[in-house]
Length: 128
Figure 1 (tube, rainbow, N blue to C red):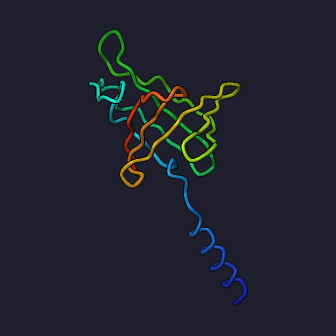
Figure 2 (figure 1 turned 90 degrees about the horizontal axis):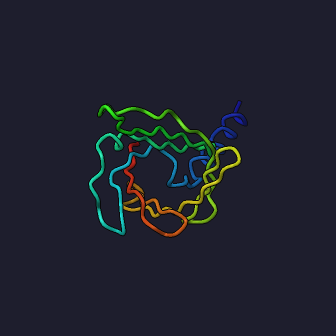
Figure 3 (figure 1 turned 30 degrees about the horizontal axis):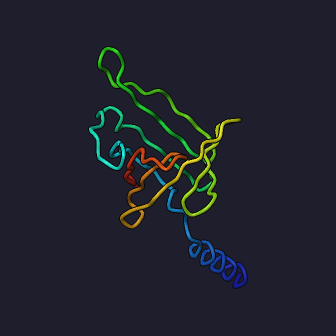
């Protein structure tokens, strides 16, 4: 019994000491960024949620304003994420792979998403 408890405590300590990737969590778009300037962003698009899980899965639910002025979900997009280095992440959906650059701010509570050409696209805020 003592061995089982010891193994459990060792496993727990090892797991809790592992550094979690800052991308893991749920993120909400806060601002649309154009050329490093804050731009007005349609309130409907701010409902978009980007989730990144511990097991390298991402789930995006995007919202847009339809022709009648109603905010509509485009449905969920799922795929896998992979950290290439401290700033570059690969997002893959089937045969499609997007390269994004991320800069984390304010103790990893916010991030700037850039495209492969180093242009700022969005500022996101951590929900959890």
